[in-house]
Image (cartoon, rainbow, N blue to C red):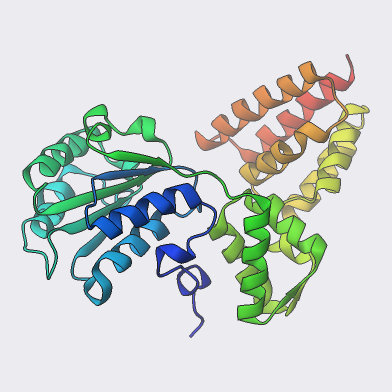
Length: 316
């Protein structure tokens, strides 16, 4: 059986959580005082929100953490029934050798408005017996009455040094080698998301114990910077059909979809030889075409429209 590296290498104590030093220090203080408030963890995916919640519970409860900790994913169970039934049933039971239990609601910004209102009332009703930790990508989607009841912690993308250290430790633990170019590629495609870093490296390491740059871009469903630059330059120089054919071939070869291409272009747009006003137009186009794709429009047509938009800039 193949282990899932994201779980295998998840820190089991706050001391091992990387890249969020200020937040970890405050959480350690809560553990030391054995006094935990309701909390809201907000920030991009893969920055340590779930890891911090689980590590806090392990540090606080020790071997009995599983009996006093419940995790539920609000994106899977987002209706009012999960608050009225599952969460209330756990909250009303007595904690084991502790003053209170912890309920962790992952992706709480997926909860419906009615479910959030019910959650607010549940937080009031069981505050003496239970603490709530909620994680979300966008705190603006959490209603104000819940936010006002929580200590809010904002998680940031990890910086390059932390990601490099993590990759090195992962390589030593899983016995694979990785080139410097491949490390840069991992950081480029992950954008500070350690979960994505781990998944990319596990997928690449299955087929080779010496990971190179091409392996990373292949398994990450991403375009190399030089490929993006070449395609964009061809579009700007009036070679729309060549750019279209080259991009189409790469999408088929790498198994890319429209959003993968848009994400790749977005990462490289600032390095293109364009005026700032033209980069602004491309950024606006990226947002528009990504929205259309998420609404169900054809990825192929939208990506070709994006290339046409860039080609039109070259004709100015």
